[in-house]
Length: 205
Image 1 (cartoon, rainbow, N blue to C red):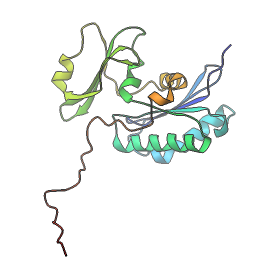
Image 2 (image 1 turned 90 degrees about the horizontal axis):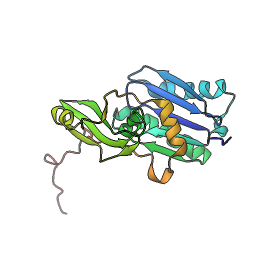
Image 3 (image 1 turned 90 degrees about the vertical axis):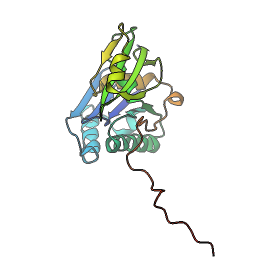
Image 4 (image 1 turned 135 degrees about the vertical axis):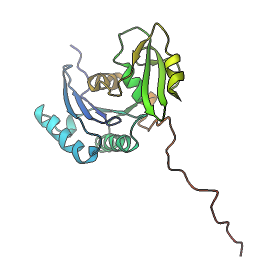
């Protein structure tokens, strides 16, 4: 029987703290908290409990998979920072999985899917997939009505913002680290932007 790399999965993009531990025998153990804020205060305590429950320490981990967005700016930074820190300390791959791709993993195998997540302001994050985890095009930010109209009639429509964290762990265990860097994928630009119009011009001396 082929063993799997022991893989930790982290998702903080939505109002949940989700952790999954994929074990070498294929079993997955989960830690899930329904929280909109406070991920930073909980994440390492929950991770310690998850590892202890399975008789493991950080040194047993071989990979980390983390959702990269779009999603909560603060939540994403916390999840990515934790994943990068663990990977750097233990010198193993960190797999960054775009959140819409991660959501597509819940669709039926081998069939097209469309992920449509409410982005507020009358907009939606939207992406089509030829099969779970296989994008048919880029992630887009569209008016909600345009996104709804773009859903193919033969596609499974997924609208929940919550990733199946067990599926994310399995995907991360097999993914090519070079194809999935742990970098934030916001899709929508941050609201805070540098000021330019009111800038005071420098005086030459």
